[in-house]
Amino acid sequence: MDERQRALQAAHRAALDFLDSLDDRPVWPRATLDDMLAVFGGPLGEEGRDAADVVAELADKAEPGLVAIPGGRFFGFVIGGTLPAALAADWLVSTWDQNSGSSTLTPTTVALERIAGEWICDLLGLPAEAVVGWVTGAQVSNYVCLAIAQHAVLRRVGWDATKRGLRRAPAVRLVVGEHRHGSIDRAARFCGIGSEEFTVVAADDQGRMIPQALETALSVGDGPAIVCLQAGEVHTGAFDPFAELVPIARRHGAWVHIDGAFGLWAAASDRLRPLTDGMTDADSWTTDAHKTLNVPYDCGIAIVRDPADAIAFFRAGGDYLVFTSLDPWDVSPELSRRGRGVPAWAALRSLGRRGVAALIDRLRDNAGRLEAGLRGIPGVIVVNEVPYTQVMFRLEDDEATRALGAAILEEGTAALTGAEWDGRATLRCSMSSWATTQEDVDLTVAAIARLVGELSSRS
Ligand SMILES: *Cc1c(COP(=O)(O)O)cnc(C)c1O
Image (cartoon, rainbow, N blue to C red; front, side, top):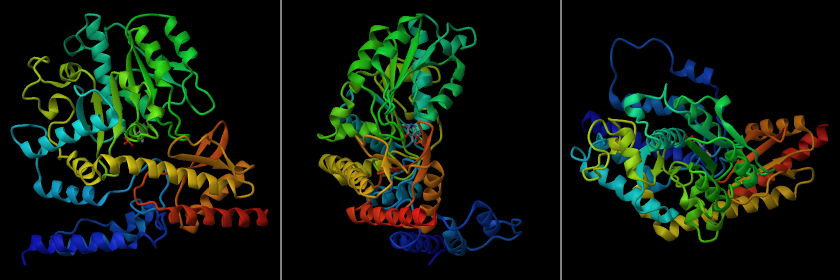
């Protein structure tokens, strides 16, 4: 066997061993960053090593610092697992090594990404004419969408910022919700818009933007404006009331962007679609495939209603009204990149329409089951309404809540992360993984009940 074959076999073996360990290993890593720096550290040796040995060493040493994210009981942040078809397709993407920015160079991967983009727009009820840019994640998608929006609203008042720049351009108003995701602030910063320049619109106790407050905010001042809405508040899972908000923004001539990193997928389920009512009328949408669709990382999606707006911002020279021979780099930032949309194609192909809907429904059902279980534990207070995949809870005392969070990670059955909500310490669970079963939810509830009992007997 040659070196390449042996290396790939070593990786294959290590991958299966890791996946096999997921049910039993502690979910949170047992090693710290410093531990792992020590494990891998030291000077780079003069001589190289055999590729298979390198892979075996890597897999072996990596173990204690790995998080069981692809398993069924990781509920931290908002992070999906990896569907089998998506993982296997991701291996092929690396193997094929297709530099996927140009349609003429890499027709296979560009075609797969374009088809996957069309399927996603169809599943989410977004306009068929919209253009889809594949980026690293929702952070970059929010940036891409806001940058395109900023240039588009300026072009509409006669200012071509690709030629004249932004420094002397008319001011663009960025209108955001009180409970926007932090990535909106960073996206705005990348666009040269500072946080003190935002118009911040009040939200209700679940984090939903209040329509009357948006009307009031837009009634003062005029000029180009962008309104940023949200599908899926990262803690409560709440959706902005788009059917009321989008017409208000439209009436004031604003561009409407919706950050739906995980929430947009509610539209793929008959049962949950009402949460997204009215979102179709926006101008741009952000979502991730690496969260709810459960593909490996490096898979965010920027969707723009009018392809001309995306092309005008990204195409280097040439006419932005020419849509034929569209290259990926005409609608997204990178030149050289991997075919990152291919695993999304494989995930969608393996699930089918019905499978995508069933996945979303199951995430919601698991959230409901967890909520019911938590409500049955004396002393646990569920904080949010649980419309979707997020469940947030706390104990009466903030210190006890934080201690419970640390104890859960230490105990190892499940992993979830904390947040501040309404000035109180809370713990939050995100149901985002295809791998989570009802049994995983029940094991998690039992572990939390046990730890709450231990904490209260100690105090
Ligand atoms: C996760 C998330 C983001 C950022 O997404 P990344 O893929 O981590 O870049 C943005 N907005 C919302 C609402 C999110 O949940």
